[in-house]
Amino acid sequence: MGLMSGTGPLGRKPAGTFNFKSPNPGQAMYMERSPKWVRVGLGGETIADSRHALLLQESGHQPVYYFPPDDVRADVLEPSDRHTRCPKKGEASYYTIRLGDRIEEAAAWYYPKPLQGAEPLKGLIAFYWGRMDQWLEEDEEVLVHPRDPYHRVDVLPTSRHIRVSVDGEILAESDHAVALFESNLPTRWYLPREDVSAALEPSDTVTRCPYKGSAAYFSVRRQDGEIVKDLIWHYDEPLQAVNQIAGRLCFFNERLEVEVDGELESRPETDWTHGVKSQAAAMR
Image (tube, rainbow, N blue to C red):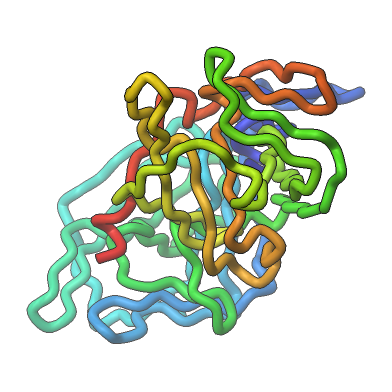
C-alpha cells in the first residue's frame, strides 16, 4: 500500500518493473526526514515531540518513525535487557517506558551501531505503534501506522454499471458508484445504500485505516439463510480527504463476483481474501 508494501515498486511483490537494476524484492530501505510535526502520547502525556523525525520505509513493512533523542523524554526511558538483530539494520537495543504506574516493557528501540547503509538510524529512537496511546501528525490523530507519503487515494464518481453477486445471487446493482483507487490495492466500488438489495446483518467488527478512518461492517444473509460474515464495510464519518465515500457500502472484491460494465473482474488476492480481523477491541 505504498512505496515499500503490497505490490509497491520496492515491495516484496512489485507489480511492475524498472528500466534499471533495482534492489532484490524485500531488500530495499529508504530513509528520509519527515516534514511533519510528530508527537507520541502515553498515559495522557507527550513522550516524544519532534519536527525532525526520520521516516524509515522498509520492503514488506509499513513506515516507522525514528526520533532524535533530544526530542524524546529521557526521564521515562529505562535500559532493557532485550536485544534483537536485523540483517539490514544491525543490532537493536531497547528501552522500557516507565510513566508513573504505567510500564511498557521494551516498547522503544534504537540502533547504537547500525550496519552500512543504515547509518542515518544511528541513535534514533522508535516506538511500537500499538503500545502507545496516541500518535499525532501535525494536529490530527493517526491510526494504525504512519501515513506513507507515497501512498495515494483518489475518489472519483463513476457512471459505470456495477453489479455485485455471489454464486449468481445479485446483492447490488448501481450506475451511481464512487470508485476509490488506492495505492497497490484493487479498485473499491462504494455504492449508494439504496442500490444494495442484499439482506444486511449488523456486525461488531471495526477496522481502522490511516487514510480513510474507522470502518464498520455488515454481514450478508443470503436467500438460503446462510450468513456471509463481514462482506461489506462502510465509513459513516471518513476522514475529510475521502468524504465522498461517507455512508456508502463497499463489498470485498476478493470474496464475490463484481461485474463492471458487463465484464467480470478477476478476484484479487489480498490480505483480506479470507476475511477481516476486527480492531474493535483496540478502539475501546
